[in-house]
Amino acid sequence: MALFTAVCSPEARQALCEAAFRQPKILQAAAVFIISGDLLGYQALAARLQPVVAAGQMDQATADGWVAFAQSAFHEQPQAQRDEAMRSASLAAMALMLAATEAGWASCPMSGFDPAAVRKLAGLPESHLPVLLVAVGKAAATQAQKVRAPVEQLWRRI
Amino acid sequence: MALFTAVCSPEARQALCEAAFRQPKILQAAAVFIISGDLLGYQALAARLQPVVAAGQMDQATADGWVAFAQSAFHEQPQAQRDEAMRSASLAAMALMLAATEAGWASCPMSGFDPAAVRKLAGLPESHLPVLLVAVGKAAATQAQKVRAPVEQLWRRI
Ligand SMILES: Cc1cc2nc3c(=O)[nH]c(=O)nc-3n(C[C@H](O)[C@H](O)[C@H](O)COP(=O)(O)O)c2cc1C
Ligand SMILES: Cc1cc2nc3c(=O)[nH]c(=O)nc-3n(C[C@H](O)[C@H](O)[C@H](O)COP(=O)(O)O)c2cc1C
Image 1 (cartoon, each protein chain N blue to C red):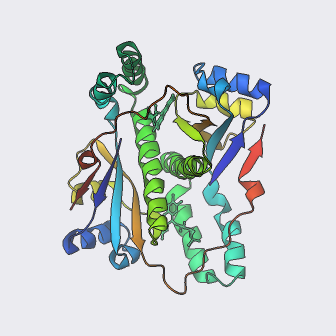
Image 2: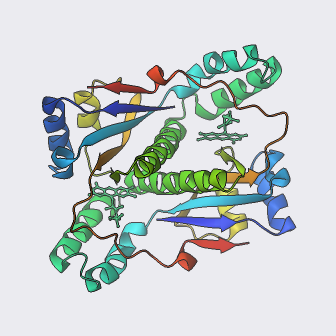
């Protein structure tokens, strides 16, 4: 599961800038978010499915099956935990960026930062991995969208 | 950089289903995509920035700086390469899912599959990591959106 941390106070913004190789966007943007993923999210799955079962949207046997699968896939599997934190947080980051676009804002995903320093300044638990920063603001007037790779390089069919 | 592979032939669909723990959605969906990330994408950065520089959108010194940074961050850093493949492909997967939603389709991200088997059946190079499958189709009439976690659990402010 992903968590958004809005970095609002000037002190937190300054500390984040230091932890992100002093990239100027961190101070310039109207808003900056840390998107982190929970390495131990699978441990909360049973509790998260409980209201789904209670609402009659899933039967208990299916929920138990999902929990057993998650346990076998993630328990004591640090690489799988990390991969899933990366996936969940990145999916969430793109949803945020497209929502920002729709609301008239420009945004920039950033992976250039020190995750341990960001975790610490944000007060995130050890089990939370900072995956991306997203800066949201007004695009600089001089900033044209960069030339994109041709679509043929981005997809294929089998 | 991310790559979309549309899995169209019945043979490829069947092989993908086997590689994804026989999840029935793989055969039932109108379309299924493999979204993979390039572990060695950083090696192509100089070539990818060249048209950006040529179009006058970035100066050569900035492009050289990005390439040097990417080299230091990713060269012989397998975990960083994997993380970045996960990020890029997951960002791309969410863009695909939201585009599908806008076009009136339901979609489902799936990480329950064997990446080595998927790489092989899709004919992807060793340097491409399958990150997510996305099934796109019509939602089953019986399928209600599951109860979501309260928004207070998803964001915080510092
Ligand atoms: C996974 C990922 C990580 C990125 N990290 C950074 C970063 O640390 N700093 C930055 O300025 N841009 C970062 N970018 C943003 C790219 O620079 C940007 O998407 C690209 O240059 C296209 O820019 P444009 O949309 O203005 O054309 C990152 C992009 C991705 C996909
Ligand atoms: C990273 C990730 C991996 C997932 N993997 C699978 C999967 O392998 N199979 C599957 O059926 N659903 C998978 N899901 C989808 C979830 O089951 C689905 O998003 C969740 O149940 C909410 O469903 P709803 O939108 O129908 O309410 C995955 C979701 C995420 C975010």
